[in-house]
Amino acid sequence: MKETEKIQVTLIEGEIKTLHWLKKGSSLFELWSKREGAFFSGCGGKGLCGRCRVRFLKGTVLPGHGDRAIFTPEELRKGFRLACLSKPISDCEIELHFPKEKQISVVTEVSSINKNKRGDAGKLLVDHKEDTIIAIDLGTTTIAMELRGIMTNQVYDTFCEINPQRRYGADIISRIQASNHSQEEKESLKRIVRNSLEKGIHQFLKTVEKEKLCKPRAAYLSGNTPMGQLFMGHSVEKLGRYPFLPENIGRQETSLLGIKTIVMPGISAFVGGDIASGLYYVWNQGGFCNEKATLFIDLGTNGEMAIGSGRKILVTATAAGPAFEGGSGETIMGADLIACLDELKKQGILDETGLLKEPWFEEGVRIGEAVLRGKDVRALQMAKAAVFAGICILIDRFGQQIEDIDKVYLAGGFGYYLNVKSAVAIGLIPSELAGKVTAVGNTSLAGAFLYGKDCIENADEGKNEQENNGIERKNPMDELEKLIGRCGKLNLAEEEQFQKLYMKSMELKPLGYEETKKELEQERETE
Image (cartoon, rainbow, N blue to C red):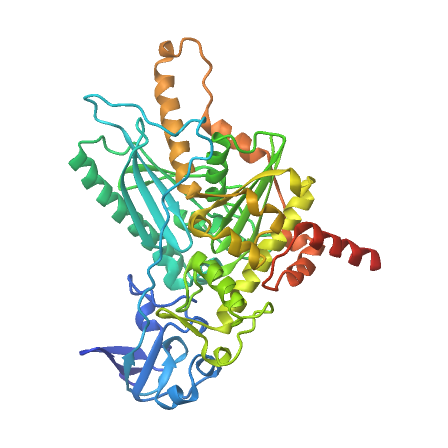
């Protein structure tokens, strides 16, 4: 690069000054986008999340529409801008005003659904080094890992971390676009997440040595379809456009630090291995086995859900975005946001349409260190409306009455902490299901462990057929494939009623399935 094409950027963070060179006309985002630990961006540099805040002391650039949407006129006059939208053309000096990283709670716990089913108690070990297995939940927002004993089911160690791919954007679409943009970014998305997982494995190997355990026999990884594809380094070009086809959705094998690593098979482009793991866990606990229907809901950056009985299972997914996890800006985290909106409604600060009253309309509502603004409420409304509409259409297409649903299992970190009364009060969950909801925790992690444990025990038993005494063994790989084979796929984008139901479900108030269904039927008759 010629000297005339470069400009000098002086970054000031507290009392520390650093000098950098940047190609003239390039975004300041370039200074951080390739840094391994850069988590400041929640939108992949599109000017939407407002996290990459800087203040120009010299060489100020003119504000754009994105800057005006984030900063007040006074802040703009003082030189505040978004780094990702700022393209300096002369030497400049800037202060960094990135917000502190939010502490994201990662749930690794799982609740036993049926105490009479397997998996609740381990075996006693006497003078024996226990075999271990690693379970991995590769989420869009967070990574959770466990080192567990195969015989005792004991959790010997855990490792949790924010998914480092977040610097390409908090949502899946941003990461798919980044991977499709260049081979370099595709390799980076693969490398940085593998580095994170290997860091967890390094920690586990120290625990293995300390606790005198056997080296992990294998690692079993579950995640949504795009996360699995990016982890394996597959092209996601077809996954980013209709008809949304993953390159490989089956059971795959790779390695991490020399440990065999199995990627759990998925169900569709939108319902991945994390849900297959969840279904495997619930099925082993007695779910999806009776005439009564079971409803399974995993809410995160995606709203994935399944309804099933002993005969069939129907799965679908709806885009929720990061709203259930606190959004990409500085706002309230996870399930607390639901309870907060319910309370603001009760206090008259927020109405059913999602409108904050004065003086909070302009300033937002300060809750602790966070500020809840109208855009945060709107994002939550859109996410909850999509989930409510998805639940209703899934139940209707499955062909059973809502009273025939015996259990509703809420999976994932969001569901683990969710206040069900608040969720019903704002119309996230149909009011008829209020008394049937059970939070089951991280079933993606629990299902990956259970599947891995079953696979290893099955292989060990197969080596010594004489010990089986003629008892026929069930192959867990076959069992999971049969479970996935029972799953019908519902594409909400192809459902005529979804958009109408979505719009009807936007208000923050209790919503009933039967009442909503009746309104739609009346509209159909009128048409």
